[in-house]
Length: 131
Image (cartoon, rainbow, N blue to C red; front, side):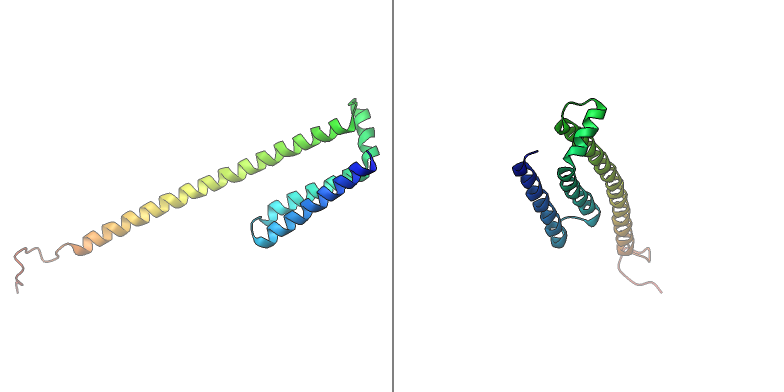
């Protein structure tokens, strides 16, 4: 990798790290996901530093280019991330359904109680009190 490419990787990685920190401070990104993206940024820096090791790993796997190995690793990481986010969305969908059901039951109970309190208690519809 050329020096210019390594500098570009460092700049992109540090900008990404800065963006993650900024999003967490604004409250737009939860800490749990921030850790994942911080790891990605740090991983980019590490991979830029140890490019010869990545090339040796590629050779041992029978892959002709370190870049191809890097893309394979990135695709596997993204697939894992999508699976993780799918699990989170599934859990949240269940919670929303449970909350919607509980809310519907509470509204129905409240409406039932309010209609019972409006019904006449004495049984006489003429409006006169019977003693």
